[in-house]
Length: 413
Length: 176
Image (cartoon, rainbow over all chains, first blue to last red; front, side):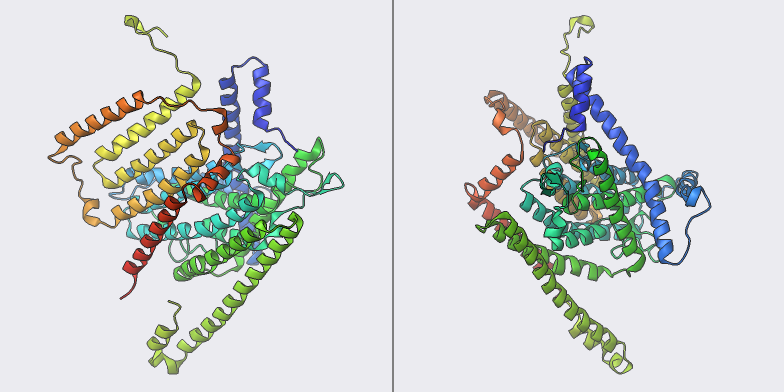
């Protein structure tokens, strides 16, 4: 099924009105980016509200409930408060880097919205390298963190900036590898086509349940965990640790500049959820999206439900998981996720070259995913049990005398 | 478009107009890399230059190359340069002049090199883009196939080089 892109339809209509081609295309993309950017900015109000409500419920509180219905306008009030705060520039700060960094952070995240397929034919640009584009734009966020850390003229901000770079670069690798499994299976980096592939036609009716996450749950889990780290969410929010580190690399920022980092972070979590939905959970696919008129509307509904579901899941994890240490974080990325993903990709590449029908290949890929995950889970469980014993032993009074030796032998490095 | 004094200025098409902007951005950023007194600002300007080059690639309808450019140059190389600058304190805090006593000679040679490049670029008959090089998934697939067939030796040697660099870095960073 070939769906017409909204941009083609609109520019065709404008050219029909007698506009020259370049003006029509310019106008269409200007309108598109205006809508997307405003959607991104405004949705953050809702995202912050969801976060506060979800975490409040987990912590047995009510959460914001004074401003507006159900406290929905609380974030607006907070934004107004942040706007009225004094804009501080630290002594001897690198002014260019310091002032450019929050803009870059938001810019890098908003650019991602351009390739997200919201509904059939409703993508900002259906880029043919969309999967790679998502990864490439992550580097802008890293650059922004580095600039903020350096430009603040604060050694703690700089240290946190280094940590952010280490974390984001490390988790980009399993993230890319997880995306690669999808690209390998669908043979396309175009998000539109990846979503198209996840339909499921039964007797000519599109059930829209051929989600890749069902075929490769391993890649889905790795992608989700890495996207938690990329969005600096718990359990990987050791860079933020508001109660301990006073928020890491953007410690020196106040007022609206701080709010921009905040906005970028929330929007990034949502967009990475949207990418996860696009790649693994069928995007806008769902029962009945093939229908002529209500199909696209249903598609938009399915997409939003799925993405906000993933977002709530992220907040659920945020409310329940403890934070991990920096060495554990690096260890987990390089020694667990990367080998796991490489194993999955090798298995999948071999399976896809087998001379069997596609359906059997899918089953084999599913078995390989579950198998690799089971092996990793077993090894990790064994490791953590040993670690637990070791930790307990090193805190016992008798072993504290020779405690150094115990931990020397027993550490994982 | 007719300016006073009888100078004829061709009106750029929309694409040319955008291209001029991208090219200007690239050139100005590249200039800023060289003349900035602050080394960190030079690194930032270099990042901007990389973006500009990616923009030029998009004009050539090589989206894959453009995105790879951002991924590799902005995501890895610019970051590496920024780290290297930050970890060399003495370079960081001295606001040194970008000129040393050889600027005259080097600018002469740079100019000569640029003239040579320009002459070559004008003399070469560049093939016009044919319909089949329009970038698409098929092109990316073809690129991959070329890497493991025609250019397999270069590809493997590059991989080996990176592995050597990685092992070397681990050896340097290891506790002794």
